[in-house]
Length: 175
Image (tube, rainbow, N blue to C red; front, side):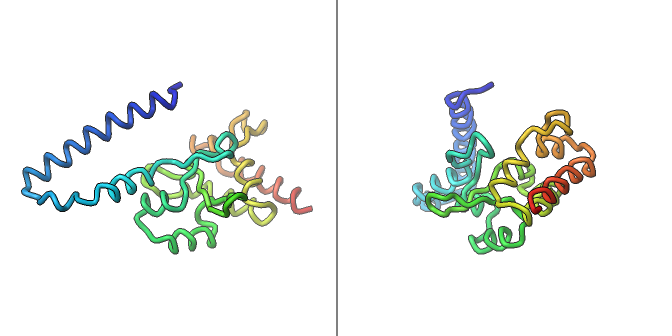
């Protein structure tokens, strides 16, 4: 397993190569230096896409915050808020500051939300708060061979098996 220091080094090495390549391409294309004048904004945009750290990371995280998600999706805060309201993204609100956070494990490589995870979310949410549902999705389930629902779904295992578990627990919670 990699440590945070090792992950940081890998990321910095990759970013350094990509930034150097971007500037080389810009020089070759005759792009004026002024295009890159707002380096603070560029750095802020780049780091906004990194998962945010919160106390809940051990249970449910890591997370994106709203700023990070808007950067990654290239949409407005309002678009993210609409996705939250429509339960088309898994979102939990932090108690300390009221910010929304979005578990990174729900997203595909194409920056979409895994549709089966949303199906599970929508099954669980009417019966429990977002944190309970997110913890359920990440907790090992005996009936799934000690895999979490997230691991089960992302391994392309049968959806009906995990949906039945979610439905049973949602009914039990609502009782």
